[in-house]
Structures are given as C-alpha cells and as structure tokens.
Image 1 (cartoon, helix red, strand yellow):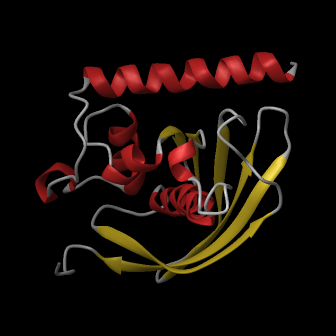
Image 2: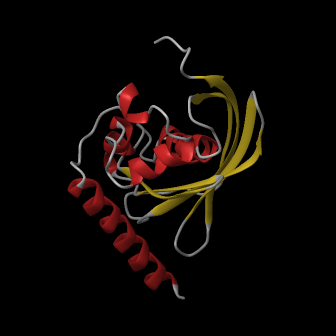
Length: 183
C-alpha cells in the first residue's frame, strides 16, 4: 500500500475513533474509581477507546488519540501543529515525549490485572527526524518488553505513513496496588 493510501486509512481510523468516543459521551476528564473498579488494565484501555471512560485532558491539549489497544501494545496517533512549536520553530521535544510516554504506559497498562496501577519511573527518548505542522499524522506504537509483579519495561516508535522513523523511546514503569494508593 502506498504512503498516501496509508495516510488516508490512518485519518479514517482516527475519525472513526473520535466518532465512537463522541457517541460514548465524548467527555474529557479522568475516570472515577468506581468506573475502573474490577477492570483489568486491558479492559480499562478498551473502555477508553470506546468512549465509555473520559478521554484524558492531555490528549486534547496535544492533539492525539488512542487508536488501538491489545495485550501488551497500544497505538496513539497525533499530528504536530503550530501550537506545539518551540521558540526556535520546531516541534517541541515534549510533544514527542508525551506521545511516546502515552503509548509506552498504556501498553504496560494492558498487562495489569484489576486493582493494579503503574507509574513511569524512567523514560529514554531519541528524536531522529524533525516533524512539522505539515508532516501529517504520526503514530506512536508501544510494545511491552517485560511485565513483572513490580516492574515493567516497554519500547515505542513514532512513525509516519511512509514508515519513516521520527523518534523512539523506552520506559521502565513501577507497578503498584492502586487500591491502596492515595492521591
């Protein structure tokens, strides 16, 4: 499949996700404890994808969306915009980092049993190609490398529809009993 067809497919997939989320209430916010109680990490991520739980505020701020989740993987799609530029006129590294951190962390989330949570302990990032507000959609594809009782590791890549690599990252996440965590 050529690059333009892949780009079109990606845009259609994102539009379908956004329509599904809107049909589910389209709310931006954070899930209440009773909304996630008893759900595995994968079930929570699927509920987010289907609009049954509110979309996180950061996704609206940075213009990206969850596109796909499965056991040990998560895919986010975003399109750099002018509002994401740094003072030097390039996409801020924080945009790449947040998109990658989302794919990494959510991939880890899919491996967790009900009642467990995670937090990013380490994020290593490499930006290898510049993106701009003319680049079009980019995808962050996260995959779990290891998921244990107390720690998980994952890797992710940001790629364009042409397969070009824009950035890649790894993470280490601590896993904890979320039923005992205090905010």
